[in-house]
Image (cartoon, rainbow, N blue to C red; front, side):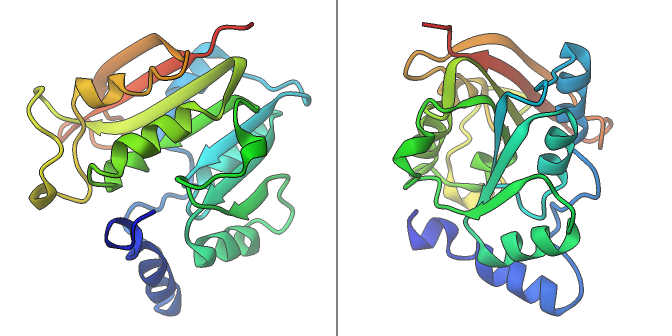
Length: 212
């Protein structure tokens, strides 16, 4: 990724770790909208299906997905985040890796039965946001599912102006970009965010790549 778009992630993780804290977006459990989707749809990997968590941070969402019996990979651009995720979850079943969303391993393309994107792309200006969105869609295997969680605009005004973020509140047109390379929407909703229902709404989106 370009340094001006993402160069601040590792220094922030490193500084907050040195101060004994965590970035402001960190949570002890999974994001509420992610949990809603997984529980409503009764997702279960059965011990054989694969999952990947994008921009995993300190690992709360990844650990939750692994608890649903998915063989889970989770990655982040920041090495400090991956180190802390492993330290915080010493008995984890998650494979944590340092990786760049815009330069992912070729072996990951169309490789995962469940792809989870929570709050990553809203931290990126455009560019490179659209390229990042397409890279996420490319992770979905045939027959697989993509879950997208993001803070939503209350209208469909512009969400790409660089003076507004990060994070940027995303509009419907941006969420629609996840329908890329054969990935299709299944259920896309703009709903109250259970973590702050009086303050904001969030995108709760489910997409799929149809089986070949």
